[in-house]
Image (cartoon, rainbow, N blue to C red; front, side):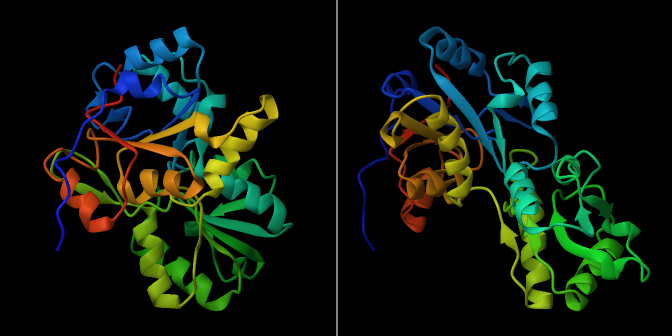
Length: 287
């Protein structure tokens, strides 16, 4: 056992003043099941005033960047446009563009989540519509969302698809759960992928935090605009195992906020237990 000094909270505005580009997680940082985090509008007004660039780096593959941006705008964050959204679904699309040339891409998720694979120009089909007649044409399985399909029949169909076909299986969202209120969580796509892996003995390809590829995707966009280095970028998140670990692995400074998956009452114990240490800890992403 070891002890650490009492958890020190930093002043949010003083921290972001040190960086040129801010990466935000979405759920738990900017909004929750109740709506926007109170006061977060001031943060984006400050970024605009100071001319700072930003991206929303999210594991949410349930909707297109256009729909994700529109949902922020309806809640009052007009500054967030589709070009500010970097979703794990975009990485799944990039993989399909490079690796799957023909046949059917079967998916689990909602029609909105299928945007990412539809935009690859491939023939897409929900798992519910697979049959003995078309299953031999399936060349990839993509798990996009935890909604939009029957958890009994469609998950079993996905299991048997992977038992009979040697194809890539993709989890476009690696998260295991997400909060639905202050006390409860719901099972997310990543946990379903883990379950299927145990049954079929095959590994899913996962995109999104904490994998570095999603950070590299955003970093390359920035580098195409102007010279920039990682010391100029701050990653802000509420989850140690995805946001903070991913930012740390990519070489970014990181800020843990206590408005989502990590709460003030257990932040210090979680940091000690996981060994995942953010550069800063702030109460909220609010200027």
